Every structure is written in C-alpha cells, then in structure tokens.
Image 1 (tube, rainbow, N blue to C red):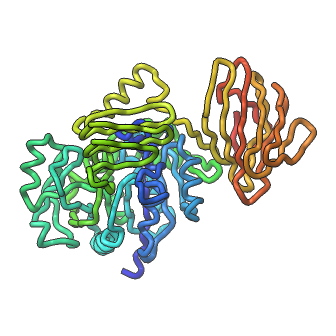
Image 2: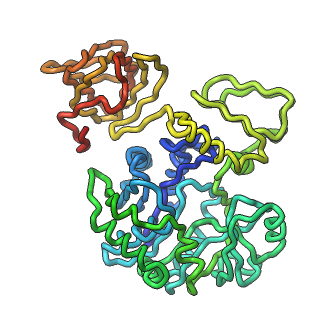
Image 3: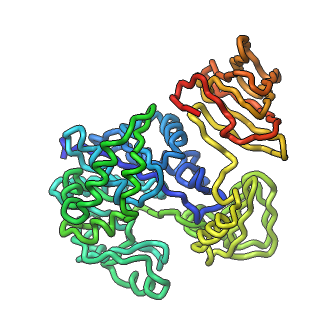
Length: 479
C-alpha cells in the first residue's frame, strides 16, 4: 500500500446548464463557490478534500480549452501546480477524457492508481470519502476497476444507479462485484429501486490502475483508445497547458466511461460509501444539500423573505423580496433571473437550450471573463461604449497591443499600474487615470504583490474582444 502512487484525475469539462443562470457555458458551476459555507469553488474543494491521502501526486486536470485560465488561476489560489492541464477543444464525455488521462499518466512509467474525480460534486464528509478511496486503492492494486457507490437517501431521477451483488449495509467500505448499471430512472422506478439494499447511486468516482483501464479499453473500445493515442501524440504544449489535437479528438466517440467500459468489464466492483455525496446537478439538489432556516428556505445574498417556505433564494446583487410563496427556486444575477418550481428543476437544461436556439447571449456567456493575467467584468454597455472592471493579478501583465476601432480610458481603483503608451511609460495610482487613443500601442502591468483594480471605459464603432493586435505577450497568445 505504501508504494502505491495515487494520481488524481479531475474531469472539469462540464457546462452545468441545470444551474443556470449562475452556471453558464463560459463560466460553469465547477468554477463557482456555490456552497454558502465555503469560499472555495467546487474545483478547488475537489482537490482540497484529497489532503491526507498518502503518495498523492499533483492532479491531471482535463478541461475545456475555453476555461484554461480559470483552472490555472484557481489552482494557483490553493497553491497547487497541476502535473498537467489537458485541454479539450470541445466535450466528448468521460470515456475519451479518462483514456487520454490514463495514457498521460503512463508516460512516467510508474503505472499509478488513477483516482477519477468529477470537479463539481459535493462531499460533506471528506474523511469518510478518503477512507473509501484508500479501500479502493487497495482493490485497484489487484487489477480491479472500482466505482464508489453512494447509499441512496431518496428516489432520485437525476442519478444513475448500480446494482451490487450484496447488501451494502453488510459491506460498507468493502468492494462488491457489480451486477448491473441502471440508467437514470423515472420516479416510479426510482422508488422501487431504493427499496433494495443492494442498489446504490453511481457517484462517478473511479479508482483503477492506469494499465488496468487501458487494458480494458484495448478489449472493449480499441478504436476509441487508438484515436486517443493519436490525439495525445499530436497534442501541443501551450504555456502551462497541453492542447489536444482538434482533428484527431473530433473522431472520438461521445461516450461515457460507464457505457464504454464499466458496463462490459468483468473486473468491476463497487465500494458503498456514505459521505454526504451529491453531484449538485440542479437547483433542487443544491437546496437539499444546503443549510436551511426554520421555514425550510436557503437564503443567499440580498434577500428579504416573508411567509416563504421551502424555497431556494439567491441574489448576486439586487434586493430580492419574496412574499407568500412555496417550493420555488429564485436565482437573480446581474443580467438574468430564474423563477421555477422545484419540481421542474431537472428541466432547466431544456430552457437553456431554447435560449441558445434563440441566440440569447445570457444562455452561454457570463459577465465575468477570465484571462491569464486576471479577469474583467462587464458593467454596462451601449451602442458605441462599454464599461468594464478589470482585475490584474499580482506581478502580471497584459500584452503589448493596439485596437483599430476603439479608444480606452483607464481609472485606477486600487493598487498601482505601470502604463505604457507608445514610447512613454508611467506609474498610475488610486484615482489617477489615462487615455489610450485608437491605434496607439499600449500595455498595462501590475508591478505589485497585490491585485490591481481599475475601470476601463471603451468607446468606438466596434467593441468586440477580437479588436486586438498583439505585438508582445508573455503568455504566448497570438491575435
């Protein structure tokens, strides 16, 4: 056990559309601190709950390329330098991601035990979780493919189920052979399933040797494995990231690890665990996991409620007032508000798809946009003007650039900035400002060990983010 190396693999490519409007394609739930009792995001907590496991390697993270700077920054915040951040050009479900991560892990010739984790799950008892992982590591060392199955507490229609060979009450933290995987059921079937004590929720947490899962891919999905090998071999290192080859990756099947391997393998076992697990895939699931007041309400943000029961109420900014309502989800952000019955929570994903079909920007885009140097927040905009709040990380710098169609005003709020405009440079501090004309080469840098915050006012005929010509960039970005 002492010599077994544990390689965490964090899958972080999801979009979390059932938690719209807080979670969006450009800024999904795994990067948000949704839990009211913690300032850490789901991604950060996924890594932090591993603390205490022995022989633990730094994580391999598989992420959508559009979120690469968010991943890097959130890992930096908790002082983790991932072994690799693998960038998918688009989503292809869990089987390709896990195959590529296993191949990547084998490059060291260590053949580690892979601990496959979703980046957006809630586990209330990390110690119990780690205990189950240790059992899983021991079982995986014997070439078994282990799934952690959580003991169901209600008839969920949002989770997949696992049928184990034995009663889970008599086998907690013991590996039981898997008889069957059961897809997400309707309510009637879910009620029947949980009557049995050999039925578990599929948590999506897996433990197996890298060589063992590759062998099962060779047996049951050889074509997919070969495509993944090609994709990884043609990948490119880009700054701190490994970009998968788009043309090769496009050939991968859009298939889960359950369908591709776990439902077919003869080596599958499940370890029942009870650690307060939830995939927090919908607002009603989040309501279920959060602390509630005496009226059964979850209250987060600027809320005034009266005669309100069993509701999830969240406001990111404006005052939200409720009166005489029950069993509702109300979530207010800077640019959108959701009001829904709790029983319709699973259908919010369909509403988001309809918003996308109608080309509503609120369906995909968040007002907060990350860059390698920090982030900006869109505050207000008109036909030919836009206001942003910009936050530049300590000792970071934007590229040397110019804009063809817009001018910019910068007003320093906190910290100090090194500002270069054409051949001149100056230091600006709080309440000082500067103007960058259209077509002027310029660069903004933060020379300090604290964050720089400023307001940017843009004006011009075109304000798109693609109006940028870069001359020098420490992050290797081109136009």
